[in-house]
Length: 541
Image 1 (cartoon, rainbow, N blue to C red):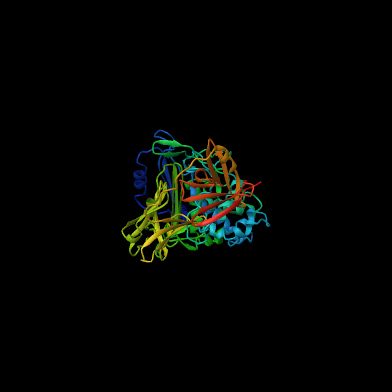
Image 2: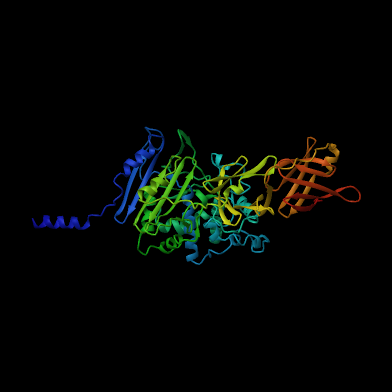
């Protein structure tokens, strides 16, 4: 009897406490999957431990069921780990967050060092560096490519940094940039004199104890349990990466991410504690998302129930990870279904999703109208419940957030729009500020284009050649099939039409080109007339 009692007491003493997830979590997951191909794996972590829940299959019904060890693409959740690499690299004295990325990616005496000095490691991880979402040399509509980042290598990324970085806005507004995250990761790898993948493994994944979390690097074998993505009923291939790995290449499981969340919520002296604490400090307002951004992480502003979170997506997969230090709980949702799980995740945590900052505008109706830049391209300004919306020809509608009188940030894009007024106080024009350029459009209709005239092919061929407007920005003029074309560096080829000998105009843009000749009649230069500027360029030998 005495021995039995001791055994019983011993058993009580070592019985672990169990996590306490919401009682209806399984029902919510089953409803979320709704019998579609693919499934979802969830880890719930709190002060009492971790619990795992799954619904659905690897593929269609009849295929293996999802488990806590099923591997999923994390997409942009990777940016959290890239930010951790920044924080840990700074803690170890290898970098400073205020270092320019060019310090590590370009030679020390490179002339672009000065022009790119504002693109710091901190600005990259907070999406305030002014870089576009994707670089200009990645090709048209890469997201429609079955494996859009597989061929994009480090040399292409550095080329894009030179080209696009020079035109980046330094206004400091947050505009989400996969390009910026890629530059950050490559710079950190270079700081450690190794690859991003090796630096991440040595300084982040290894210390966190994540043994089954890896990068989907082009040419490398995939994990055996990697789930294929699904878009509706269609199965789609997994993505692979080279230079864009820091923006979205991680693959992991719910069990592994539970280990990570446990460290994030822990109060112990974990080797990564200082780096994690550094990443969750607010750095900048995230007006386009709601709340603030830390290093990588997004932070809600509810002091009683703050949630630190990030989401991610590839073609056919979606990930959401979040934790609340005030509630001592965390959740990760991994799915091989193309469907957002943010509302589900915040709901499980008993929190409200962040809301985008909306600015109402006095006399919003005064801005409404069409602002054509060319006969084929215009920006339409609309009003919705006192807020301004814009839409460029052939593009999705975008929001506008006031930053000054008559000046607005374009939500989610590193660009701004300002409005000009006439003497009567009425809006007369719009100026698009993007990529270091100011493009002006009058409100209303464009004047009719010049009358087109015919020039002989022999004359057109005299204009052919290269005309550098800047060392890295060249207008290339060619004659093709009896027509004249002009192609700017990093842009598509466009036809120009003669209005007189040596005078040409665009039909797709509000711009003209004047060719100039020397005393012998030889074409020696051109002048590009656009946005009120006259930009000369001498013909290359």
